Image 1 (cartoon, rainbow over the protein chains, first blue to last red):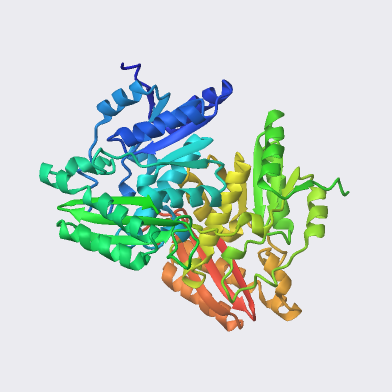
Image 2 (cartoon, rainbow over the protein chains, first blue to last red; image 1 turned 135 degrees about the vertical axis):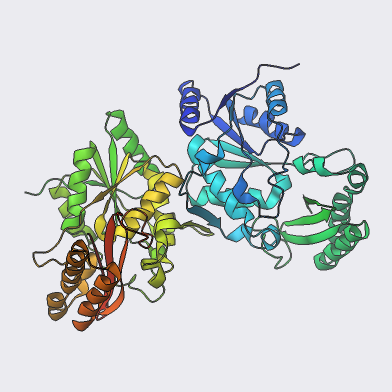
Length: 282
Length: 282
């Protein structure tokens, strides 16, 4: 049953006033940063936000600085009205939808780079990406000053980068990661799945299946390098162009250095003109 | 007459509690970020801080990340007890003296870069400098969340970089610049003047005199390129090694593009092992 659409604010000062109001009621505040095109993964974040904090703020901003010049910024799905209906259903308290001209005014010249967990993986293929993410997330945190911010584990490297960022700048925001939501056939939910043709959609779960196979091999004592190479071959055999399949330390995202460390498997591959990513714990 | 030494806090949470107390009294808060070794230039900033805001916070932190590997971090003057006495005289309300291990904990990986006004000048000779400054100033602003922050015009490019940073990250801090304080012979006050031998100290004002000469030439219609080249020659003739003498747009610090723009003259030069900087308006 649809509830009332959340109030939408477009400026940082309106946002701050609303957050002050929430705090005046004694509520904690959780922020769910999104680029819109909301799916069940986002909605799970909003539900969780309401559980851990009294009030939920959802930001919707398709951030131009995290797209490269040849990437899909212009065609990225924009479904603002449908997003508001979905947020009404889960009773989100507030939507923050800033304008790009307010986020990046004339003369804007600042960029935040996070080393550590940003090294390798996505950065090898999208070198601009985490600088853009870190800068906009820092701004969103500074605008909202929430107690919590929720991110999906589907973008696992991003979750680690944002966690590091919040700690390093002492933004006082506890970053919370939530498990990836998947379709019945294993495909991780993503706004970019909308780009897939029916044939591509049928093929796409191979990434998840290949990662699962690699995880089983490693749990059975197999060499992670061989396991990820085989997963990569399996994904390529289905017709995808693999950017990477990698086993990394699940906390630092550093290359594996020895036994007894938590392992995360991460992959990125192109299916036609759509780039898909996924990851699982071992 | 010496007043009471200001209270000293060493952690961001102690600082926030103290600032909350100031705000609870209805006071505005002004921050004066310093690396200690306080001189009359810093003290003028603190006096002004008390005028424009009810409460003044002085941070003292010799920031390692803005020094290059061959620079003077280890020998930078540290005069904490004398600094507190000077701050007692001007009735500063609070000193924030964080530990480096708290500012840059294990795994710290974030760096803030400001383009625009950081381009050229100091960056040509100290490429690490403004990244280090921007990162620590952002952290100090986030820790303190002051209404105002005061910086001396002696570090004019830094003033412009910090102003840009505060605006770009929407930190809500109004950055205020204050005119350079000089010795009677024109030498700009600097903590690094303590490095100068008596002979070097006698020579050092040549930078200011050369800049004054260039400003006069430009005001009389002279070509800024010729005027700054002559100033550079005059400084070199006194035995200094010149890093730069430049005429720039006083607001953007971009190279001069035409008539009718505000002009700032900026210089940096080595006197023995001491690097001095200065600047003046035209």
